Length: 252
Ligand code: ADP
Image 1: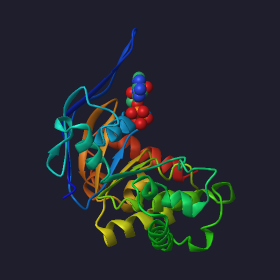
Image 2: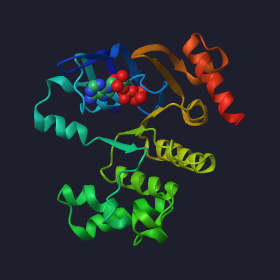
Image 3: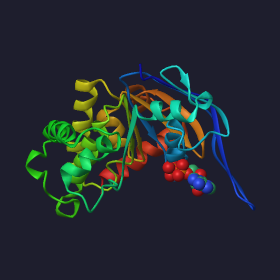
């Protein structure tokens, strides 16, 4: 089971001079199999929230449960095991530029101690899924943005995660490439049963593939629910603003 429960999570960043309240008392349930969009303007707290889901950020208050386990109560080794069920992809792909495509995909497996031959077999299966079989010897610098993100997705899948976190994964891509990456994510969700959490500032991304959406504004969860419901009947100013922003964006 890979459901996620975010229970009264707050996060405050402190340094000697200032305190930033990045998240205020967030409560959210993400069910196993969801494609859950978390949307908000820049600075709303999206990245902080998604980093709390794998405890790269430890919440100042509250709990995060993955498959019923409270991440805050786990030992280092237990936390590592839980984290291995969660993969992440990023806006700028984070590929190893000195390694070719297949070695990038193999990397998490080699780290885990998988033998090179088995790792390569697995990587080839994954490259087939992301339709990059013909590029296994290419280096990241020789690939388009969409192809780089496909490599990153294949690498994220190598550890057979139950949850895939996508942090602005399509924000650096043009609309057509965005659409093909979103179709791939949907296919992965359906075929592999992987729960997907998508952090984005683009309503179009949420509309295209998410079944649920949560809207963050200045660290507060202001609205959440079924995507169709929120789109047809936005209940908050923040949701209306994001929908308007999308219309303006698509008008060019
Ligand atoms: P978003 O992803 O929605 O753009 P972030 O989660 O990155 O928002 O940031 C939310 C708020 O927390 C912002 O005000 C940001 O400046 C602040 N913040 C994020 N990370 C840190 C940090 N490590 N130290 C101090 N402030 C931070």
